[in-house]
Image 1 (tube, helix red, strand yellow):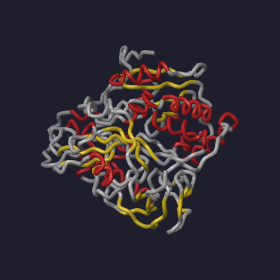
Image 2 (tube, rainbow, N blue to C red):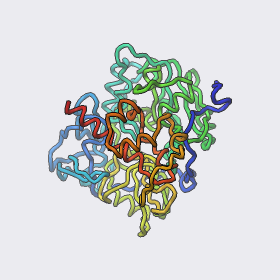
Image 3 (cartoon, one colour):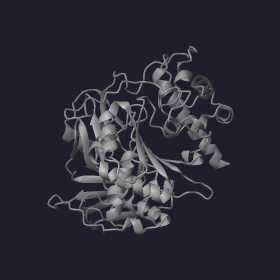
Image 4 (tube, rainbow, N blue to C red):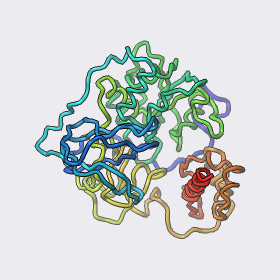
Length: 449
């Protein structure tokens, strides 16, 4: 399908082309990272209500055993990533420097770390409602970085229908190659996951969207489409933020998600390819999410690669294993555009961590700091914004703390903090940071009312 506004290209308007920086890891197969002696499992590592512990201090647990139950519908359980003992249940440091409740586990280093929980399940016998519950029981969340509970996206609100499942294999963030390797190495699990979500949503077709800088993944996924599955694989333009669900919906099916809306409002369900691989692998055997693939990259590590690591592995341990270079650099969870600068080496890898980057502070993609200059009205941010907002105007209003105007008249909440505006700004204005503060204040005011 082609769209007249883009000619033969499958893409969206605006966006940017930052340096890809994927050469360090794109050809490196997935390798298992050793298990850390001590793991930290935050109870809130997903969007929604924190999980509730169902274990006690001193209790022995085996790998895969449930250790926390969902705190509500928009919540997921947690499972033990290793066989060991519960050291304590207390506060742990998070990536932003705050403290949050967590379960601490000491690994039994003599254990073989076999997964002892699980049971064969006939997926075809489950109803859509039962599939939703089964997905929640796995603890799977969006593994593209958002960490939104996947089962919630499968529970259709009354009056909503989904005819198309979009599989997001874009991975447009620089440095990251996690999804790329998953598409090359876990293709059967991906298609099992696609079948499951199509059944749960009642969707008639699926479309896999992969950027043109991953043509080996395009060919691999096309060659592996199961007979009888209404699924196509599309190569789409490599551009940031092509992987944002609104942009991907526009590029692949030509549907405009309304302001303040979600893809489900136009009959589309969007799922990260890594998320589907985990659903396809875990659901048929009733196991929980206890590990994920993480890209470790940047000039600050000696052995960059794509590592399968246990959820809860401390960052300090990861860096020891990959050979952290003792030099001044910036540490980031996720990608450089939307990731989080890490405040402590003692924070753990959580379900939503797609990458661990160690890059020099003068790298073009390092989180910008230094002197901020006045806006020169160049319009670069306006041309870059994929949501067609006016970041310059929003930035000026943010400086004046006119948050109400930003929200009601300038559509602040449509911003999904992709970072395009900050990246292109010649005045080094931290626009995304301004917008995050403005949205946080707006939400607090709404709650107080």
